[in-house]
Image: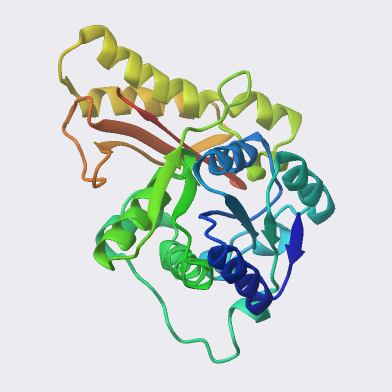
Amino acid sequence: MIIEELPENAARIVREWRRDGKTICLVPTMGYFHEGHLSLMKHGLQLADKVIVSLFVNPTQFGANEDLSVYPQDLEGDCHKAERTGVDLLFCPAASAVYREKHQTVVSVKDVSNRLCGLNRPGHFDGVATIVTKLFNMFSPEFALFGEKDYQQLVVIKTMVSDLDMPVTVKGVPTIREHDGLAMSSRNSYLDPEERAIAPVLYETLNDIRTSFKTKKTPAAVLPLVEKAKAKITRFTQCSVDYLEVFDERDLSPAEVISENCRAAGAIRINGKVRLIDNLSMK
């Protein structure tokens, strides 16, 4: 596995692969790899000749009071995991190499960015769309993979690619979960034992909504199910709800009744400090 910090060197390596007729799959990450990340890498190995993993804690997608300064990092461990998985290139640049001193350009996907997580994290998806655009420009991959745990992010990137006619196929990869249903996330490392015991409640409530829909096998009104789910979460005094919604998974538009085209998604905070997100398809 090649480890490269400089964008120009990484881009040169990829151009050489392309001259040899190799296809490229990009897996953008912020590191601190867990099985969810590794599943993306493994999927990439099935799609393309060469897999690039970017490891970059992107400052432009963090708000002023968010966890940029303490975001978990383990470069040595990540290198070992990526190499064992079969990754060809690990791209781990410094912020100064990605954003030049007078960087002014921002990519904004307006409508789908301003729902769900976007309501509580203004500017977050502009940062995501901008860094992904830069990575696409650096490497011109045929494929790019994103985890479905961050489903809104996936829709933002797919919308951007469609709107701007970017020649890349964006695919979502199913969420990898712990034994109790908690979606794997680098931020799970923030949880203390008591908080970790509570954390699966988000998955449980989303699964309750899906089970209710599947049991009735008919369109179900959203509001009563959502209110019941919120009550289940907030019975824990440590928990607060940023949002809990059901939406059309194609464009994130709010749903009044649940159908198989819907997803239920939520974001909660535990003790005001750890923010967890998750979503489930109604299919």
